Image: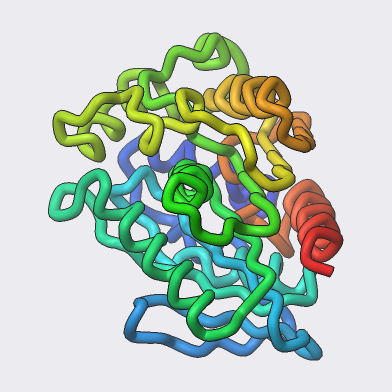
Length: 281
C-alpha cells in the first residue's frame, strides 16, 4: 500500500513540505455519487447539486488555500460530499488570490455571493469554509450583522484559521508536517498587505462574535491550527453563541479533503452534513 493510499491528506502536506506539487489537492477526495456540477460566471463558482435536494436551502461553501491557492474546482469533490451528506444544494464560490487580491477583496467577493443568493430567493443559507475559507465565513457573518443584513442560519468551520499572528501553542505540539508559525505568518502578511492582523473582519479570534448563528467546528487533533479552533470556540461560547467543537484524533489540517478515501474524513463529512441539515430544516 502506498503512502497516499494509507493517509492521503497527511501525505499531501508532507509532499508540500518537501516542495513537491504532486499529488494535486483536488485528487484527495473521491467523486461524490450523483452530485451534478454547474459552473456560474457571475459570481464565479460552482453549483453542486445532490440528487433529491429541495429548492430553497443552500450552503455557501468557501474554499481554503491560505489565500494563495485553492478554488471551487480544487474543493469540488469535498464540498460535493458535504452537499450530498446534507441533502442540500451548495454553491462553491471562487475569489481572487494573493498577491493580486488582498484583504478585504476576498471578503467583498463572498459578501457579493451571499447577497446574490439572497436576491435569488435562496434560503435559509448555511456558510461552510475550510482553513482561510473559515476565516472568511466568520468575517462574512460579522459583516452581515454590522450592515444589518439577514445572517446565515449556521456556520460550519473546518480547520479554521482564526489567528493571523499564529500565537497558538499547538504550533509547538502535534505532528503537523507543513504548517509552521513562519509559514502561516507569511501567508497572513501577504493577505493583509499592511492591514492590522487583529482587524476583526480579518482575524475571527479578535471579532465581536455576539449574535452569530450556531457554529460547528471540526479540527484535526494533530494540526498546528488546533488552538485556532479551540480559542475561537471559547470566545464564541463567551459571546453566547451555540458552539460545537469536535477534535479528530491523528488528523492534520483539512483532513476532510480526503472524503471518500479515509474513514475519518468520511465520518466528519457525514457528521457535518447531518448538523447542517438540522440547522436548515
